[in-house]
Image (tube, rainbow, N blue to C red; front, side):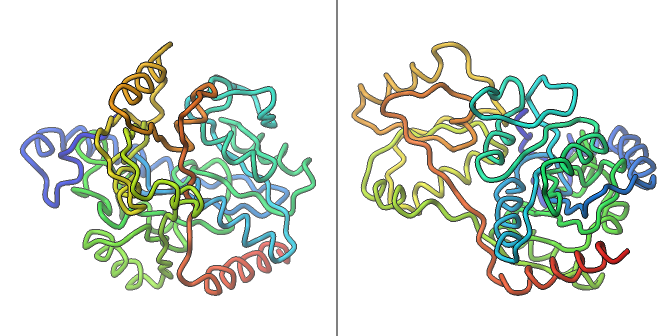
Length: 330
């Protein structure tokens, strides 16, 4: 799915207003659903979600939180729905055996770092995660899923887009009305800067919720390699334009850019055709790690890893420690 442009407008467009009644119905159903109580897991559960549909940086944030937990001697296991994969029952991801068609692209990225469970049934998935020997579950997405109780919930927000026009699907990007989601959130992670994110941060602070500024940083060695390089960039993620700007920030000259829908499933030969086109123009083909997880190994293709970096690492660590103390003493 590619997010329509009118979702990110500061005020609702005519199309958004026409869709607003459908959005109101969707939002009312979602609000009732997320208010349901969830089951307690055997391990503390940290949820990394977002208010809206589309990419905001949840997976890099989940990886960064797991790394912080490891510094405190706590082993995390990831739990994710496995968007784009066909697995129906809880599954411990094995990157050597499973591909994106089974578990989805995000699960493959997570599994490189820590044991990762794919499960549409979050309660069953949490039970399997407890069997991995982990101390804590980090759930990638699932903020609006009420079935599993969360001990700490982060909402990751793109600073440039915030919550867009503030309407619910399909009129806007919200997965549920914001007023119904705030009580489910303990802290805001603002990924990048921008006026829409700043306004949401003000609301979070007014509600007594901490705000942590973060950014997506490219892997330094590859970023240096791209400096001064003419590239053909392609990406099937929630915000392809962010990836293109990241390449430009690395010093690359993005001569051609191909924006594809989030979780785009590449047709046979599609990526090879892009690489062949890049060669004819003397360009280096570059994509995201997430896209690379949906592609076979292709000679000459570069995948640029990015990592979430918190400005206030100590503050995030302190919040994690405080909530986990409460969860383990309950």
